Length: 524
Image 1 (cartoon, rainbow, N blue to C red):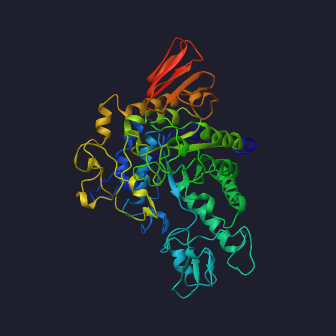
Image 2: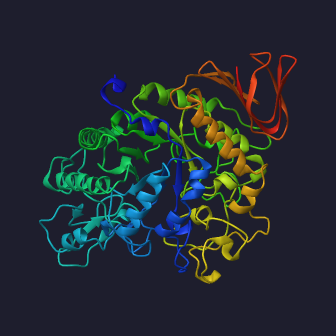
């Protein structure tokens, strides 16, 4: 079985991960853009919150046509974020606080300004990228090359992102650019991935979140060859860097974790498990992503049925060999506080995330209830067709000073505008208010870390899928979550469970009484 073949580092199984969008988190030098030194100065907030792993979106050298997902040098820190010394200082300062650092790896494409591509546009014998002497299909993905080589190159998203060549799973007559996965170019790129990861592992990085991990091998039915590629990477990591990990942006843990990833996310673009929870999909512009029912809907129109079906299928396929990661949000889709859901309504969503046997990933600012901001300007490719991703990338709100404490730069020089709402939450105000969402999250994180039954390894038994959602963990703990405005009731499995973290839930007369937007964690 997969669980017998692969070991998952214990630290990952116990982790609470915090995602930082570096350009929006903390600006140390007053240029309006967040940086590594700014993050280092704010690590005490993460340590106080209780998270033990921080994941940074790409911080490598880049022209930033797509917010750093167009890498021009995988071995260099982007100057706007600092230097390698700043990266060393961050890793060391985090280590002293018991926090591991993970970076974001972009393996499927580079910037068009990367030296690899600049050489490839001139040399017909260079096959690190995918080239054709004519336009292939789909036509929009083939970009004309105006340099000496001529022809066309395949781009993954924007024209500035030429696709690296990891081969095609299936040849096709008349399409010679479909090289096999064992051709020279694809093999060179596999070796380069190992070199890049090994470099940063050697500097103390504990792992990578892997961008679009499913997309490397082209025309790959069932992602079979892509899975083999990552399986080989996992064998190398287990052998050479056994305490380091890979988290996939794949969105299908049933496939990616057995293939070799230590964890994969439920994501907004793959099926319904995540959207059926909070439906804060891509660029909702103040509305639900697709309008279908979700459990954490104030009107209570959803259920946990779709999530549970996806979770059970993934859990069975993974068979103990890794984890499903459950994010509150990320840089590509809306925050928990969006649409009709205010920050006063999201504490039960955190209670669920932090007591279910998934790997919790908290997006920066969600712990204080920062909201998705509609109508922000496009910045560095954030407006992707109809997807207004910039609404989830606004500056972190630290305090009541200018620019919410994010930066000393003039407001018109900020990476993106700060939330203009006078009632915007800040870390400082939330820290001072024991009833704030921030304190709910901190207490729940502490409870998870102190209670193995609430973590990834404890068993789970669902008692009720509706409102309230009721389940037990490890046979020793009872969790009640009511994600709607109206109160709800359900028979209690125990007469007097001991409350551990309770917000609006009581057990009396053999019945659970859950107020609107409430949660309770009890010891049986």
